[in-house]
Each structure stands twice: as C-alpha cells, then as structure tokens.
Length: 112
Length: 112
Image (cartoon, rainbow over all chains, first blue to last red; front, side, top):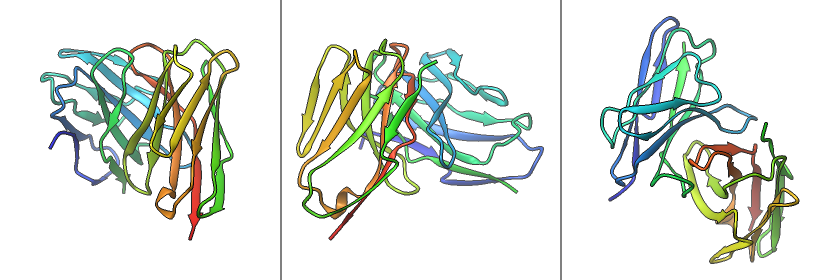
C-alpha cells in the first residue's frame, strides 16, 4: 500500500527542547517537502529536497533542520531556536520536477 | 512575491447544487496549479493538477480550469454531496520543482 507516513500524529514538546518529526514514503519519489500549516494561513514551505544528500531552504527555514540520507526518508527537526513551533506539519513527495505532489496525514506539534 | 487568494473563504450550499470555487494568483509565471481537499485534522488529498500549458482538467464531478494570463483558476463541483464538505486548497508551483504556494482555502459545507 503505497503512500507517505508521518509519525507521530501528535507530539508535545517542552520549551527549549529539540524534536524530530518523521516522514517516510514508499512511492519511490525523488523529491520530498516539509510544510507548516497555521490556523487561518496557507501552508508555508519549510525545506525541500530534490535528491538524496541535497536539500534547500524554503520560505520559513529558520529554526528547522532536515537531512536526506535515504530516498524514502526526510526527517524534520524543530529546534529550540524556532520561536513559535506549535503548528500542524505536513510532509509531501513528488516524482520530481513540476509534477503532482502527494501529502501525508500530518503531525500536530504542541509546545507545552 | 507570489500570492494566492481564494474566494469565498467559506461556502454553504444545499445538496445537489453545482458550485464554483475561485483561486487567483499574482504572478502568471507558474509551472502548474494543483487543487487539494483537506478534511479537518487530516492531510491533503490531491484532486486535480493542471500544467501551465493546459486549460482544464476533469475528474469525475470535478472540473478545474486555468487562465494563466489573467492569473485565475476555478474548481467546478457538479451535483454537490454532503461528502464533499471539506476545505479546498489551491496551490501554484512557482519553481518547476513542485515547491507550492498555497491559498488559505475555501471551507465548503454541503447540507443534506
């Protein structure tokens, strides 16, 4: 059953802690993306990767970091430098180039 | 900077009506436009992708059109059903790498 798996579904973090969100895809897609969604706002691009071992900053990369060591995995770390991390995080993938993007079910991160 | 606007922000209709959702973008230099559906607390489901060279795409009761020169797209839903109730998001690829700029969405409620 092909798709994009994000885990966990809900995540709670204390202020000052780093936390890592998982994103795995078995679609054999080359490109992967991370977006953030806040109430009343459109999704905003955090980071994206077109190929293994390469990634680029999106519009709101400050306070986040990523790695792309395997084609199927693109974890996102929310660091303590991110001032307002509470949000819904969505991972996506595509074949590459200007093609259809597919999304996971999201991780809701709450800072407590 | 590309901006995407969706009108209306919310729409409530009785079952069976045909309806139109609107999307506009400020920079006509796009590679494609994609329509998504989002149910509460869930990820995004891709509905239709229109490449920049295309004028429209159809899938079942859905039809999306694209007018690049005027910076507009419409999503037409025929014979609406309660199961169509969701938020509909429009997004444009501004880079050719499926890095998407999203609108804030139209929240649709179809009443039985």
